[in-house]
Image (cartoon, rainbow, N blue to C red; front, side):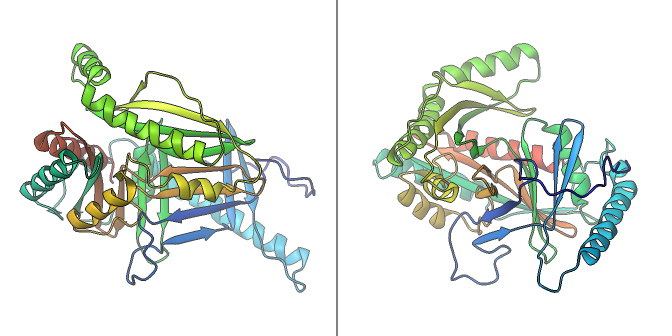
Length: 381
């Protein structure tokens, strides 16, 4: 677990995609600058002191430093050496324990309290269906928050290792607010990525549980692929993403029909969408245009968000919000902060949501939310 120093020579070279500074960003689901006391600001952009990029078996450390007229090369090198030693010690002390299996909570907590009772949630689904049936909206995504407490403080590093182990195909993330609260998760949903002006985004909507046997799993997958209700929910997201990109002057293309994205406990309909980005478009313009997608809000967006404010009894904060980075050359990657939890000491708030469309069943939507809660809760340490 020690950090090998392959070459300690100092050289000045042009930035490559691996070495360039990356500005890390988080944006709240709702822009609420007038609110105080929130866990995270509406927008945060950070240039970290250290970036660590892993490519295969190689890790690249990039140090970002503010240089002034008083800065000396000796002081910079001394500071870098001290911090490298601290990072190495952290790895030696913590890494082995962090990735050890069998440390998860298995979802057994001392206390669980919901921000919304089952009956209230199901009634909210029924009211949302009423708005849908009267053609006020096509879709509303209702989220739910579950507060849990355990005897000892949650171990964020170990929880992240569990998430990475359980969900190797998801984006595992962690965002701290500097005041003891950390937002972590394993999101299957990419909002956008840009590499060499090639944009990729994901339509991820329509879901079913995984089966307990191979035969049951195949049956559930076939039902998902052939469900008119699930296909309609998925197509809403595909149409929104494609139209939004087209409105920005891009030419999106994507395969049809959707494929399956299979995770350990749930499977989703998935359509990857790509486009070529013109130089005049900034990545944050794309983030602003795409967020929130119908997968996490509904459609039409404004009307769906108004209903979310009405039915949900908690602040979404960073839940289902854009999290990511922007590179110096315009490359970027943003995910959607779902399958997530807010952690502070021995308390955690778990988030999950369900998309309500015509044909949704309140009992099934409640079951889907609890399925997502269980998967996340079992990964917390």
